[in-house]
Image 1 (cartoon, one colour):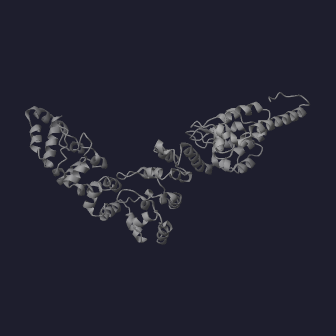
Image 2 (tube, rainbow, N blue to C red; image 1 turned 90 degrees about the horizontal axis):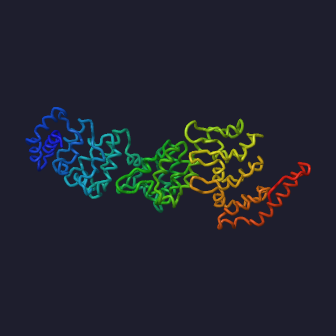
Image 3 (cartoon, rainbow, N blue to C red; image 1 turned 30 degrees about the vertical axis):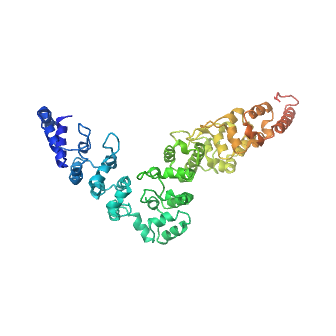
Length: 499
């Protein structure tokens, strides 16, 4: 350790009235360290930094873990501020021992220093950070400090928020004759959500995000209750109407040791509500980011990765469809032009909105007919084909319509193509109970062998959807009719069709 370090440790030991301060003084000014000390004075100057206080000595002990440190914390905080630094949440939660059983917060509890941590001077302009640290303190110690059932002192909270230009949510609720407890009760069994919203509306207010995210004494919000998830879509729409929305940070914000809102959503099997496409219009990157924080084990209950892909594609459509007028298309080339200059190609043809407005778009295209080849293009962040997207959006009937009108058939490769999760188009159609449309006889006229080959890829449990023997007979009949029609066109010349 450098001589400068020893000097600083001696100063800190004296400042915090360390019981072994003489040991630190002796070490700093011992003959063997004297040269290093003089060099350090010349090179470093006399500034103490936060790191000097929060670094262990040669024995691995922290000088600050003493009653004197907390007695003189105001002085220490001022010294740290003069070095251009401040104490942050992580400083108080950093372990002070190799066994990771004790941190600076524990030291404050033991030596009466909590009141100095949870003060305006320590967290000025950073109320949210202080609140998150507050919930790291065990409830008994919290109750002892502010006598407020484990909550922060309201006068402290009010003054700190006011300094940040904010109003304490509890004060706004009081104007409607409500308390945080009333809000929580609204989402419990026999709760009256409508009455709470009525009272807020009566004073020109609404169910603000600040109200919904108010932590109780344990650190939980209203989203601990199933009722809050049952009303989540309504809550989110109401927030949007008032210019508010839940951000990714809101879902993953950790208060104390309780589960965050995203975890609560998983526990309540409500992830599908969190990732409802309508809540993420224009925020696709945020939607991806939040899904990336969903644990793999959660993706088997209320929302699978396949479900997310579908919801994301719908959010993608809501985001970009406003840039396309499907009733006034200049031609199908407009449907193939990417809507974003950078990143994966997002085609108007691949948007759910196109398929939802298919009749309007087709009428707008006139004789500029879409083909199955057009549907094989990839579109969107998920990199799926337009064909795959159309099927997942529930519009296979329109795909069939395009195939018939263009005269271009869907091939074995089309049906056996897979999405990014390894699900074939054929299996997706089977899951939607649409195999009867896949094996419609006229689609396989002249291609009966292909139809029989495709049938071998149908899972055993899905085969009850189709009487394949009957479908094969009908397809052969359709083939004969096609051959007869072609002979008539060709003046009796027989084309070669496989039966």
